[in-house]
Image (tube, rainbow, N blue to C red; front, side, top):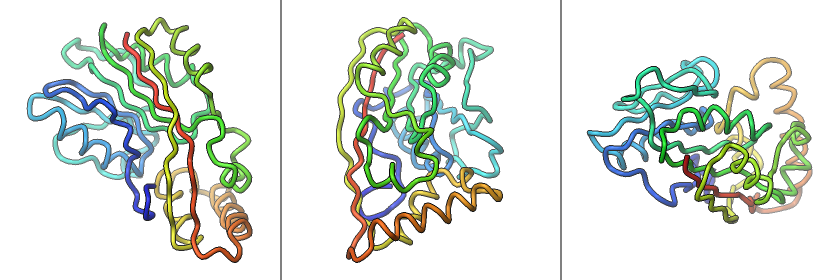
Length: 226
């Protein structure tokens, strides 16, 4: 999501990947194409972008030409050092475990490789927290929790800051469409459809009488090096 309701990766690239660098990209399925395009533009012809896809790649947005995809959200050490990414970028809206996320990412980094994360933090969104049926399972770490998790993995040069991303949608239907498009796999099957219907009803109640559906989402940006 972004202002205006368009679907796009949040602007997490505070420092763009260097030309020629190798990037392991973690992003929700609906954001992979946008994220991979940004990374490919930055690394150029000599660089490489590998996207880690959760579930079947066919269920995800196709990655642009020039990138490859790997079906996994737990990237381990590449078999060849030549494939080791120097940068890891993450845009994971609803992380359930920092150790599960960060440990395999650390192994995928070569010494000196950089980690960039952009994820919801404490105070993320009162409206979404109250309306989304799965909100109880969301992990919304604050700065200290994230700093501690990075330090436990031996990562250094840790920097963190919070920011607020503003979204404007013309109505509940557009807002729901934007939320689903980020990670459509969450809303498949009977349980997924039931979750979607409850989410739609709760958002309609929360924004009853409002001309637009405006959200202010608090996020945490983190950077570190191996």
